[in-house]
Amino acid sequence: MTVSVKSFSKIFFKNTSKVLYLFFALIFISCEKSNSYIDISGPAMGTSYTIRLIPKRGSNSNINLIKAKIDSTLESINDQMSTYIINSDISLFNKIGKNTAIIITNDFKQVILRSIYWSKKSNGAFDITSLPLTNVWRKGKKDREYEDKWEPPSDLDIIIAKDKVGFKKIKISQNSLVKTFKGQQIDVNAIAKGWGVDQLFKLVESYGYKNFMIEIGGEVRVSGENIQNKPWQIGIDYPLVDTSPGEKIIGVVPLINKSMATSGNYRNFYEYDSKKYSHIIDPRTGYAIESSIASVTVVSELCMDADAIATALNVMSLESGKEMVEKNDGIEAFWVISKDGKFSTVQSAGMNVNLLD
Image (cartoon, rainbow, N blue to C red; front, side, top):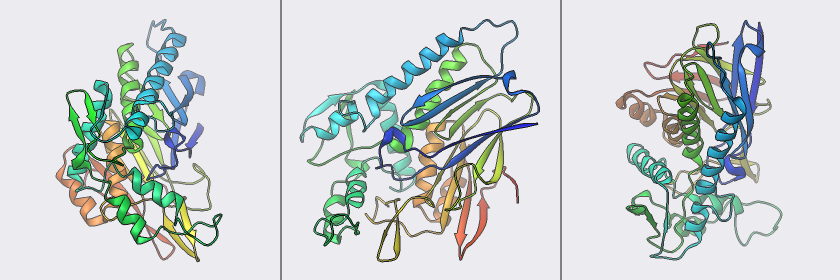
């Protein structure tokens, strides 16, 4: 049996404003030689992508052509939605003035509309307009005593930034994204990687493949079964601060025709005066969350949904998060709770995790 582990800790689009950092170990377990699969990989969205195909019988697919199409698709998504690229569509929107607009693609429009959908479902725990808050917390207090020593932002800084946040203020008129007020900014980091996975899924499917796996930076979507005619085995990192991604797996999720995303807050934080502040900012309050939730894994049909929901569930309380999951068909979740140095797990009714401990 061979086991190969791929882990990803880079931030989507190389942008540290990502509210939630994803530390997700993707494991492929196979009793066949690794070359039984066709693997395609490369850089994507500030991290990496891996596509694992089971060869079709009698197929002479041009893998180089497929890879070229994949890279072209990822480049197009970057050009639209990357805050790291200064002339991307989203960067241009963030720089334009009040009551002006940019023309966006149907793809970008769908990402924004789906973001608004999950903002409503989560009562604002997921909000792509929270970039002003993220920037305030990243920069820290403006008038701190030592410039090279981070301090939490002042209440006034948070209030000013929070006034610029609100998904209900997003305005789309046909394919025009309108800036409704000065300082409005959006950041789709918490959903666009999932969207990217879904787009690559459609692309690979169009070449006639039935059994394959798509992954970008830990966000996963699978079709059919693995080479053993069994569900794809996708691993979840144990949320331990002093371990590397992929070093210790808490459980494995068997997937068939599903997507999966994991978000966690246990590795990245700010620290001041012996107190740790999470990188996860609650857009509803403007403050860093204080939560015992170490990580959340979400399974759904679309990867963009799993991506967004995992983000929201890290912000929401365990109780409200469970309620949201159980009310929405086709969604399952797995929480890892950290309390007093010990871990416990909670999962929704239909979630299937094979715990390793």
